Each structure stands twice: as C-alpha cells, then as structure tokens.
Amino acid sequence: MGDKGTFWMPQSASTVSGEVDALFYLTFWISTVIFLMVVGAMAYFVIRYRRRSESEVPVDEHDSRLFEYSTIGLSIVLVLIVFTWGFKVYLKLNVAPPGAYEVQVTASQWKWDYTYPDGTVYAGDLHVPANRPVRLVMNSMDVLHSFFVPQFRIKQDVVPNRYTSVWFEASVTDTFDVFCTEYCGNQHSGMLGKVIAHPQEEFDLWLSEAGGGDLSPEEYGERLFGQNNCNTCHSIDGTRIVGPSMQGLFGSQRQFASGESAVADENYLLNSIVAPAAQVVEGYPPAMPPSYGSLPQDQLNALVAYIKSVQ
Ligand code: CUA
Image (cartoon, rainbow, N blue to C red; front, side, top):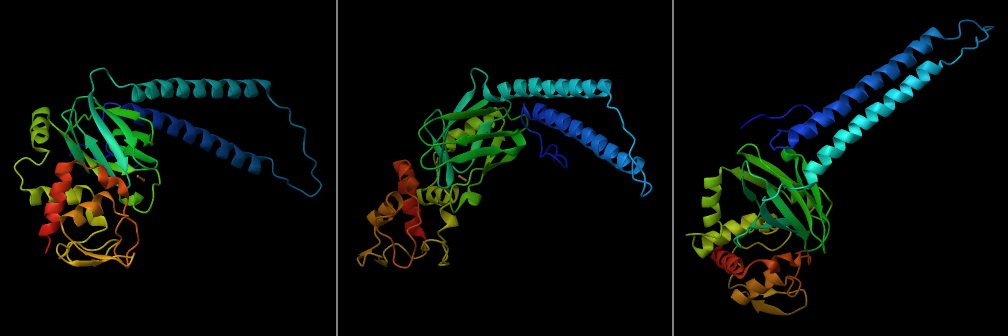
C-alpha cells in the first residue's frame, strides 16, 4: 500500500524518511549540476583550445582571481549547508523522542528476536504500533549484525557486549523489510524479517496473542519453526538441506559423528536445539549455531512438540 518509492529510493514510510530523502536529493542534484559543469567545461576547452597546426605555440592565459575565489566560496557554502542539514537529520535519527515504545532486539546467527515490554519474546518479524515512536534497544549474542529497514531509512549496527539503539515512527500501516547488512556468516543473506506496523488496537490484540495464545503446542511450534528460520536448514519432507530433515526424526535411531548412537527422544530433540554441537549426526557438518539455546522454555517445548509431530 501507499507509495512504492522512486527510481532512487524505496517507499518512504517513517517520520524521518522524507527528511533523509530531501537531503539525499539535494546532494544528488548539487553533484549532478557540478559534474555536468566540470565535464561541460572540459569538453568545451578541449575543442576551443585544441592545437590547430603543427607550429602553433599556446598563448599564455591568465587565471581569474574572481573566478577562483567565487568557486572556493560557493563550495564552502554548499558543504556547510549539507553539513548543517545532515547534522540536524543525524541528531533526529539518533535521539528517540521521550516516551517511545521500547522493544529489545536480540540478533544472533541468523535470526532476529524481539522482546516486548510485557516479556513476550517473538522471533522473526517485528510487530509495532504505527504512528507512535518505537525505540529499539539492540544487542547481539554472537557476531556483528546490522539492523536495516530501507523504507524507514534507518540502519544501525548490532554488536555483542554493548547496546545500540535506533528509533522510528511508522507513518503508515503496512509491512516493511528488515535486512541484516553486516556479513555475519553462512546464512547472512537469509537473515531477513519484516516490520509489521499495525493500528494501535490491532497491535494490542496481536501482542496479547503473540505468546502462542490458543494454539496447541504443535501449532505454536510449527509457527516458531518458521519464525526462527529453522526451515532454512531443516526440511520437514525428508529433503537434505544443511542439517538433517525433521521427517520421521522422533523415535528414530541416530548415528553420531563421535561413533555413538541414540534413539531420538524428547531429551535428544531438546539437547540438539540448545547444545547442537554435543551430538552431531554422522555425515552432517557441525553447522548449527548455539543461539537457539536462549529461547524461552515454553517455546523450546513447543518446538519439541512440533518436531515430534513431523512424521
Ligand atoms: Cu546477521 Cu548478517
């Protein structure tokens, strides 16, 4: 819905995106005009002052002080305008309005987790109220990631061992893209998500049901399996992707790279999620990151219930 953006810019959907775009277009057009002037003058001089005969000796041209000073002066003024305007927009982008709705963002290989003020942990997509400032307080459990929503014109690195923050106010109710824009390992390009901006009441309703609500453990687990991007590495139909398929996993005999073996019971499923390096199935790389161990217990239970049900 809404505008679809321009050739240069995606849809503009936050309270600051218009200002960022205006600054971009100012810089873009100044650069374009200067580029054309320089290239135009160069082309003109090449033709105008070309050597016309073998014996021609160049005439001595004197430089114009007035021209030099005015180009220096104009450049300084243009740079100062861009700097001052840019600094104002930078401050606005970096200082959240007081009373902003706060969501904790936890990045890990290779997913985004969102923790709401009521304690709800939701993976994958960020749901927010529209027309209200939202401040994200972010950190990473492992390596550098970067949180980027092009339609809001916000981007902020997410790093381990410290908090970074960014804020936005969605000016329309719509669905927007989240990209990770800091290379963070194999599945970096798959570390995607959405921001879904709801009207306030719809958001309140969503939040009240986000913890699983009336879903059965299997249904909730199925949803979490998708939200946590488990399906990028584990199929449910027997296809081999990166890790073993979930099909018929529960109750089967597992042969490990260590030479040991075990029957896949509930404890095995849980351990494989929280400590994936402990029992690596023979023939598969030890590629699963340990970050899923931080999921809340009820979500782990739901995932185990779902995996049990994939036959
Ligand atoms: Cu996370 Cu790239």
